[in-house]
Amino acid sequence: MTTPEIAPLHDDLTFHGPLSGERAGRLIHSLHLPDGARVLDAGCGWAEFLLRALEANPSATGTGVDLDAAAIAHGQANADARGLSSRVTLQVGDVAQFRPESPFDAVVVNGASQVWGGDPLQHTANALTAVRDLLSPGGKLMLGEGFWEREPTAEQLAAMPIPRNQYSSLADLVDLAHTHGYRLLAVEQAGLDEWDVFENGHALAWERWLRANPDSPHAEEVRARADTHRAYRLRGWRGTLGLAYLTLQAP
Ligand SMILES: C[S@@+](CC[C@H](N)C(=O)[O-])C[C@H]1O[C@@H](n2cnc3c(N)ncnc32)[C@H](O)[C@@H]1O
Image (cartoon, rainbow, N blue to C red; front, side, top):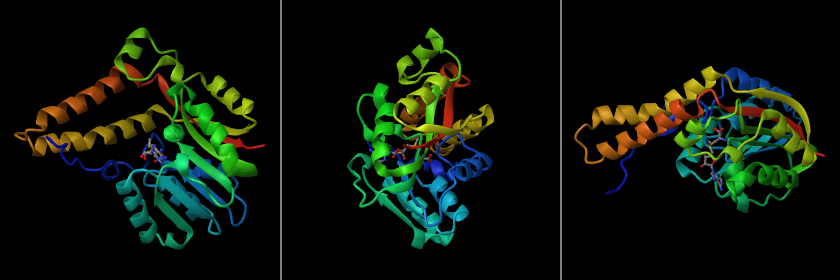
């Protein structure tokens, strides 16, 4: 039985993560992009953050790379509609295989440190290492990365598919960036409202589909997916897993 088509996340979400427009604007400002800046968004999804960075910096150009062809197509349609096509290249591809001709002034890795693969416990360190090679000296990294806002209980860990040691405290996350040669310029974290907007949008398409297709042979599978995700959220990470936004400067 093939999986049914569920409406894409971008139907219900502006960003593919717990991020408000206001915070996105502040994070973009924190990068202080130079004139003519070249920006890479690694694992860009539909690239809303990158498009906003280009709108805020009219001489900047951007590249976004993601494996998800539908997300890239949606980002491209948005870029076209907002008059940004001449300044942005969105490509379907594996970031781990991406070899640019020249380095970038800024790299965005937002909820996407996994794009370089490897052991999940090493994703953050791998991303910090890989990005250093993509940046010009003194270039900026906007890293949106998980951390534990509070120590997860044994019950929470049992209820979600995230090993305790995949993330650390916020202070240890920042220290890890420093051990990779970066300096912290700014730090923020997603608020509970941003998480709730994100999670509510995440679940909506499944609920709409179930309402519209009550007799589908896929209904049980889709309901199970929605229920599993709701349990991860409400018994697992809500209020415990944080998302930090670090603005970092490379050596
Ligand atoms: C949580 S989403 C974040 C998307 C985007 N950064 C944002 O904030 O809206 C993670 C993204 O990483 C992409 N991805 C995962 N592995 C990848 C890889 N090896 N190369 C490129 N993209 C990848 C997924 O397709 C997905 O769009």
